[in-house]
Image 1 (cartoon, helix red, strand yellow):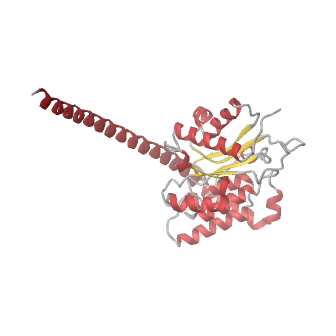
Image 2 (cartoon, helix red, strand yellow):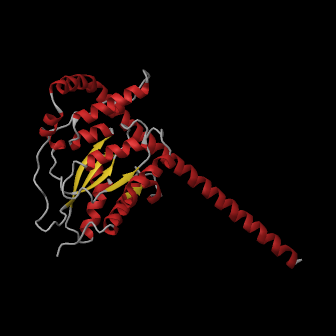
Image 3 (cartoon, one colour):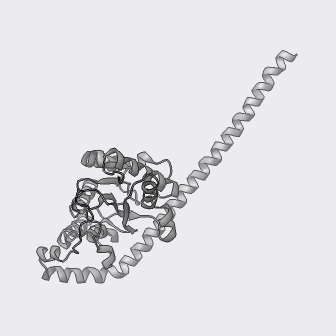
Amino acid sequence: MKNRRNPFLLNLLLAVVCLVLFAALAVFLLWNHRTETQTSADLQALAEKQVQEEEQTGAAGEDSQTEENAEESPEASQADQPQTSSEETADGAVQGIACWGDEFYSGEEAAQYSYRSVLQRLLSENGYDLTVADKTLTGASTLSVMKMAGVPQTNLDAYITAHQQAANGGEIPVTETGIRDLTPEQTDRFEKDYIPVLFMGYYGGWNHDTWELIEQQQKVLDTFGTNKDKFIIIGLVPLDGSVGLEDYDGPMKEAWGEHYISSAEVTQHSQATHEGQEEIAQALYQKLIDLNYISKAE
């Protein structure tokens, strides 16, 4: 009797353990789904808020820009861009990292959890005397990023016209045509000789065409100085889901090669969460080392 009952009890115990593990897995998956959903909803709300602000000022801004462009030549537009001094030493040592493009946080949260803030912490903790410059915009399109970098207005107008033509009279998101009003502080290129890190495109502005985004990224890189060839691109598929991961990462890897970091490949958490930003910063820090872009002060 004893030998017959032991296997039964063992099987019963295993069944109970399996049920408990299954229930725990189900609870975890439900929690993870809710976290991802909430994160996406928060970012969507942030983007919509920024869009509303741009819509309120965009129409007047576009009209005034059009009038100014009619009177202004491309040469004059380029001449009006802010002039900056070099932040490099005589021996060419890198003085900083310039993080350009999208930001998901603001205020104290950004100062603690944004990938650029985490990168600054990692550099300092590991003995690198380098400044991480904040050249990000919350909820902004790539058009605004290019404007902030100093890309000529004639280039931006060409993108806007192309986006309008592609819409063929249909409704078009404001991020595809609108450009945010920028302050003198935002357009100041004090970091022009820093190493460029571009994380741009999440909120749109490139007509759902990855190759156009790559072209826009190159235009931003072209505004940099001494270290323009020492760059890193971080990729993240757009908020509206208009371009899938394969159609996004494929061209990015082809265009940028070893300079490219796919956030989908280096994160286990949603990229906009605190944990996801930490993972992106870790990958960026390692890429800077792998490409031999940074060195410790002697």
